[in-house]
Length: 441
Image (tube, rainbow, N blue to C red; front, top):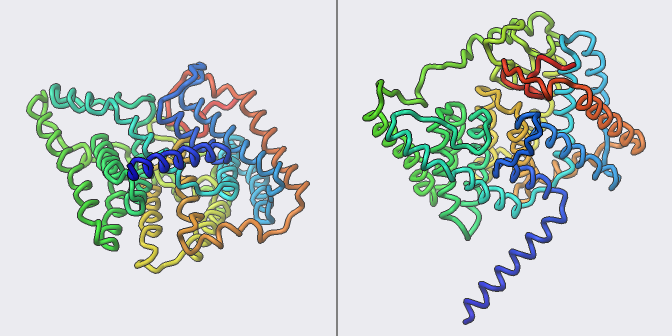
């Protein structure tokens, strides 16, 4: 009787927490994740990718409006220098309007980091809701085994599968944390880790595989009591993948190779060298929107975040990125015994950003934003005080800051109203800000 009453009280407490969560601005982050998880599309004719980009901008501008209303939208002196850099750079960059849009989007993501607080319950809801993505995975695996042909059309949205792979990587980091720190749903979190990594392997997601493997190794080394459970889930993903691949090979017309061990088909070396050549043309300011000299046979980004920033915005733009990285590295604790999780997660992010260009996509940008909020602003970590108080250490005119926000809002509205890229049916390159980065007006 007592146990039943206690369970009822716990359930009521969870419901009250969930209702309270809806009152926070962070709930809109959760809503954005749910739209992706459930495969919601309004069928506007603009395309799934463009719809998600519009929703992302609306979300980030909404957070900015909330900050302005509560009088904590502050534009720092460094940020004004960033705007000056954009204005001057526009005279040097090819397709300058497009690179400006990209840079202002990055700025909105950067500002949103300061507006948001980490909500553990929201993370639990997102991770548990993400199980919905796997509903059709068994069907795809069965078809693969019986036909010898694997297709990734089991995902709810018809997007680049690397979007899902990077999403699973980030959500797996959250799932591991929840498994380590929570008392309830531990088996569910372990199941998510297994399914997420299996999906990455099935898709041949090499960048995400390397990043997640490095992350798991570090966690297992410094969290010995649960290392065998995490190691078991990780190993079972590999074993299941190899077993499925072997069974599929029995029904395949041609001999199957391991997708995860395939020879590169994305021509990364060529892309990286092309990015370097692009940067050499204008090392100080960069060459602007990266188009591989208008060659459309390759992706329109270098599959390496650092090379992308360097080639597109030059040494000055790269300097802003390095300043952010230096601020993080300088102010986190490097005590591996205590802060191994933060270091392992950051290492995983670095590995993937070095090998993949997937974080140009809306959902992966929001997922990465939420991960950094967790890693740098979660009160459980010792460096939280610095990152939570960072924005307050700069003085700025509030009216001028609000003016900057209004200008940004008008700029994005003008872009969305006037661009033809939203409805351009031509899909000759991987998307950047919008579906087709080559046609702006």
